[in-house]
Length: 413
Image 1 (cartoon, rainbow, N blue to C red):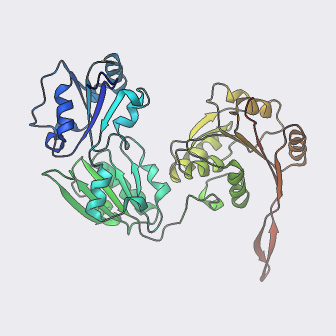
Image 2: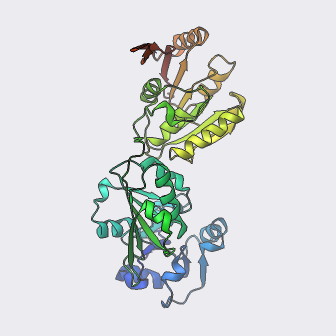
């Protein structure tokens, strides 16, 4: 039965650095049946000298993703083959196309991914190695993984990415990290360059545009794990900060889960939404903050702590919430007493979602107690004391008590 008879009109084929020679007989057969071929980024060089089949049309993503995508979707029902490097479903065009084309319309034939090939050269077990993409993404994403002993494999944008990574590692105190540049893995031009981040940043060696970067993190930089409860001084703030101990408990109330969206309402310096995103699992977050200086702090904290995708919205709730995508979780860190804030948040929250609010004032506690009488949920009051100098000795200094309310919006009948 042909691909079209099964409804699969779009074939996505991953190829290696040695071009068409890396394809299986099945992939080669499907390629020659294609009426349209769409070339992935960087493939012009990989396919140089290769003999492609005669075609009705050839498209290239370099012509603009949106325009090319519209042309591809307009060809639905005719044989279209997209060529991509490595595994198209791992940070690749296949995963992107899946947002627009159903799985039953697609036939994906992967080649070994850049991560698999790099791990085979380095001898790193993939299950204990972070795999990230810095291709078309800020190098700031690296920061979430920068801990002594961590091993990271990163897709890269061009020859400059490795230098930016080296600079970031050195700046964070991890200049002893070993960088391994793996150029054209699996191809005739394969080359491996290995240097410490400190040496790389100083010498700026010539490397190719097409490589995977291995990072073996070492040094005496700050250890900032993904477990909630980063030190307060990890954040730039003006005092409007959910303190470390309270933050850890608050995140436990929010219960991060894969692909869940958080609204951080009255975000302050963004500590809750930043730590939410650092949990990983594809979590998303929107920080809503009215003050410009605090929005600048949120942006800086998100970049420095490895979650530059944090979306920042200007304004005060409830008006600033209009038009935002429905959240799975909401944290109200400030403004629970403001008129309409809880009502707008509760209305927007998805059924089954969780809402958590913190209060430090008597008035805020009163509002939380009232709302709990209507909607139920759990209340916790935390009083944290930290050690502080008392003359020649050491004593306890109490922080303001914080009341945490967590509730679940029941599923609709």
